[in-house]
Length: 194
Length: 428
Image (cartoon, rainbow over all chains, first blue to last red; front, side, top):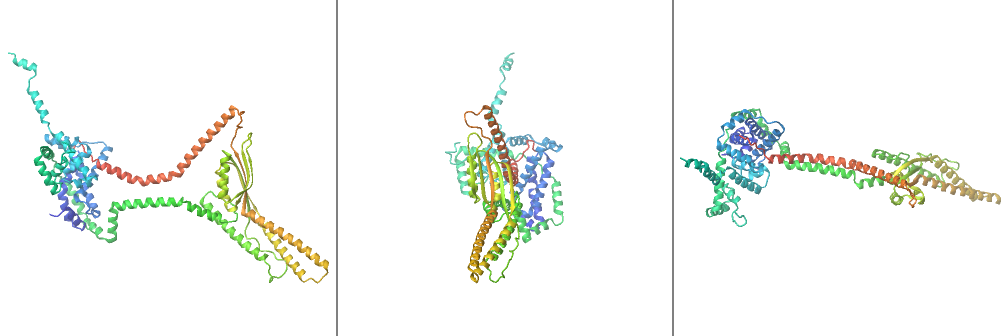
């Protein structure tokens, strides 16, 4: 299988099929990228299109200094930041698609979302890029323009925080179960009464 | 876990799980995890987190995205255009240059450097000195108002240069006429007419100053700077009146405007006047008379050399020669004085302190209050003026830098925005 960078260079030389291959490779991951960051499904679709169009329009300027994947997600991050600024200026509208999407979510799915959303922005972005986009530490560093060690420390802290947020805390739960299973003195008294 | 004593950091355990360690280090970490319960626990926690995160699944991308991209791809010449841009030699290089961030940074830096350099050259002391040297190199006066702008200064300098050339031409002509010319026929001969005006410039200025001592020190520096001198000076520092200084300054005509400009900076100008006396006719008349006198002397000397008459006639000729010599020397002195008046302008300067209460014990409360009010008012005006001057002098520079730094600052701001990647708590 050809590498992404080889496909991009082939597209620069006029091979439309190369870009189609790149599109097929990254269509779903990129849509997932936006979908996990935006509540509006329609906007996620639009931004996915815009991201590919940006790659298409800037193809002649692309240079293989970094991986294509880093380039693609760097564009996606910029688009997301722009979308975030736009949403700050304009009032939020909740579309039907969002509600449908939320209603389809499972309990575990929602738990993960809440845990990720509870992270602060810097840690959240690093862990998302690693866990869902599958970027290496170096690629994350390039995309976010931060040092490699910072990526590593943020990622570790983010995962530890997620562990705390996702962990049902067995000891606490056990204690709660014990309390719930133990009848209250008044109830015990009632039970003991004939 | 104590990071200072533990040989493997928790982040390394994570990096090992993520496949981010080199093979040698990875084998070490793997061996350590097998032996260390704490690291094994961290490994398990990280595994658990990753496996839980995987549960967050999103739907596949809709087909409409593919259609949109296909439409863009289907536009005629999309790939060909990209390829063509890549292949073209100079144009391709230009596109690559435009795409390069370093090229943009270098471009901005070059523009900034160019602007700073231009501004520095505009305000360079060397440039001012060159203009000063050009100006002071001229010895003739120019009847013009004080220059208020560079264009006026240039026009004045040009006019002065023209006058200087005319004067030199006149001097050469006069010298030629004054020299003994055996070939020329005897008789009365008028010198060449004066080609341009010769102006003896004068000026007077009354200044109101704060303290006389400081003003006098500044005046002395000013005179030295402009190669001028005070032909007379009177200082009055009696207690019952404001201290004052009256002086007559002799300034090279070419330095007059600059000197007046510097004098104005010493204090507040209450009155100022400038004048000029056209001495061209006087100069020409004197030169013609001198010329004729020299010729008369030559003729008398000729008569004396070829004397054939009586002794009384010879004595009469000698007396006439002596009288003519006296006239010649007198006229030469007048001519030199006239040249000096043209070369040096005269400034009558009067400087007086703005107010000065008698400093004795008899000064009244009202007078002291008045002085305080005047002093306070002057300080306030001076502060306002200083502020206005500061804003006017540095305002354009501040605006320039604001314009230059706006785009980089905005880029940094945007970059910070992109780092704080947005995330909706209600994300799908």
